[in-house]
Image (cartoon, rainbow, N blue to C red; front, side):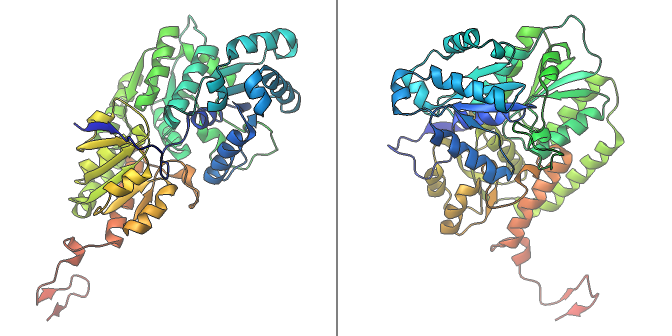
Length: 453
């Protein structure tokens, strides 16, 4: 059990967290033919746009209501109306996701009332789904904005149906999962003869593919029709503590029961996941997963010589920190520093003494003497100053390619992640590790089969 504390500094030094509007916008980017809009200044949207482009290295559709000094004081209804009309005429989206920012939240506008009036004055917008989410960036963090956006999508679009669609299940993934993670989970669900509807599905929109033709909106993801049908599924699978609110809302609206998996990284976690799918589908676990499980167990045996006793420092969103931290603790690592961005029920369960809600300065101060630093790309300066290797996890990762294709879930993802960590320890060998132990005066070389003196 960890003690959760909050940094009391007057300012954030090298911030770790990203804001709620960015998390909400990313969730909408997983909806097909969607246009996310940030209700705020142009600078607010430009920041998020640059961050996503640098991380995913893809074209990102993201619009703004372009608030200025006057409209911030007088109210932004006209800006919202003009933005929606321009988007409707030029981009032709099937859905619009509207997220607030700190600028408009501080003013305190009645957005729900404004949207009602805007629809009455513009009949062409009557049939356009507009999902509005309160995401002030002066509180909470990235995964909170993602969770709120998914919950609002469920509230606005999911319909209750009387008939159950055979084999259909809902998958609500957390913001800490990559496109590759989603592809692995979907492939696993489909292996049991089930058909998953992913909300939101970044593996369809931000997986780094080249579209056949240009689109001003998102180029893939979950369709509005699929979202409408989620009320007829057999069950809902939520991955990450952040998704419990959306899963609960879906169950209350439609009666579809949900099961929450706090992580899908690790041996035990994937055992539980596969047994759940087997029970849900009535089919045995495919043989290929038995072999993958065996490979993971062997990888853990091979790697524990190099991970056991190592001191690590983690800075990440709560669900990502929980997934990575518990796995490394299982591998014998000691978590000496754990810094996160927002409150979560998982924090007290972390296998360390203390979890701090703070910034990268807090992480750097507590990471002295550690063997490995795990955080996003903004931790590279701390890694250089401390002289310890950095393993990049989470968003943003703007100084490496393939961030969207990094796999850490399932037996295969867990295996590869363990090898990645162990190889970093092998590369930065310290005194006391097997590779640095002195050889005896005489030994048999297993490669040359000779005796050395």
